[in-house]
Length: 116
Length: 112
Image 1 (cartoon, rainbow over the protein chains, first blue to last red):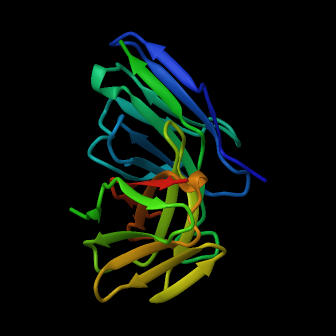
Image 2 (cartoon, each protein chain N blue to C red; image 1 turned 135 degrees about the horizontal axis):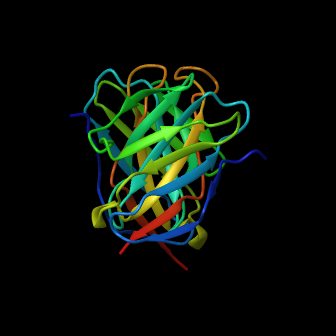
């Protein structure tokens, strides 16, 4: 069964450092998403990406964040200068358009980001 | 601000009983509704999705949708200890690229 793959599973970084979280979406999906979940809190939307550009972004997704699809398979989230409050589980998801049989978002296993 | 509300629980039921999980949402224009299961430290796993008013059944799971009341529920029949997890209600925001808006989740504990 196809799945969304995320690497690394755990990333530890120092405050102020740049991190790149990587995702390989399901191959025939066209819509890609990043969400985050701070420990004990709800899953929050960060950004959606379609046709090689950002479709929507939340208030959380400020200038410190960027996304890229550098090739036909990878989808990355970059945080330029990490803060303590960026510590969270980051989930990549992929899916099809709303209102279609592919209107499902499938989640990767996540990357736990720990900022020290 | 579009919101999804769930009772955080914990909801405790004995093995074999029916677990009933509820969710309300604020955006009357929402069209797609999802239930995800999340084990501690793991990612959300899709359990059910529903688009139309009424009931949708899949094995031991039944999703119920009432758009007039802006209410979604999930029933788990013959609950098993392995069903113990946090259940996340999610509503898809408008537009074809609509992101999911999640509730905080209801923690379910099934006692043997």
